[in-house]
Length: 78
Image (cartoon, rainbow, N blue to C red; front, side, top):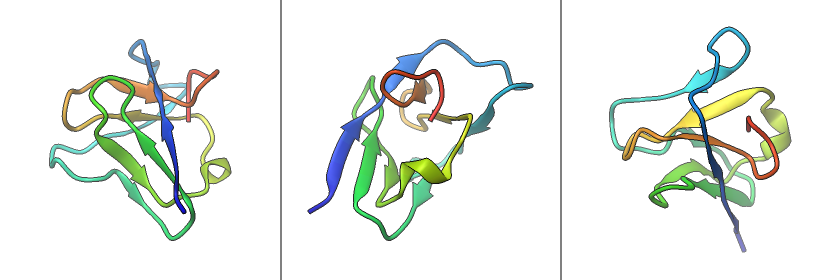
């Protein structure tokens, strides 16, 4: 069963220190084959589907639906 994680909305990040994943299409930003999915902390849009979060470092996900920036719980990045 897939674990669902709601991310935290964060202030706009510094693009020099964080990698920002963003797209204009209303689609999932990251797709994988693991058992953890991540939702936007503001609107609940699925940002990352079936991934292993430890594969990403200093990454911020910008929601294509509401344009908020999202980081992992207890962090300013994903």
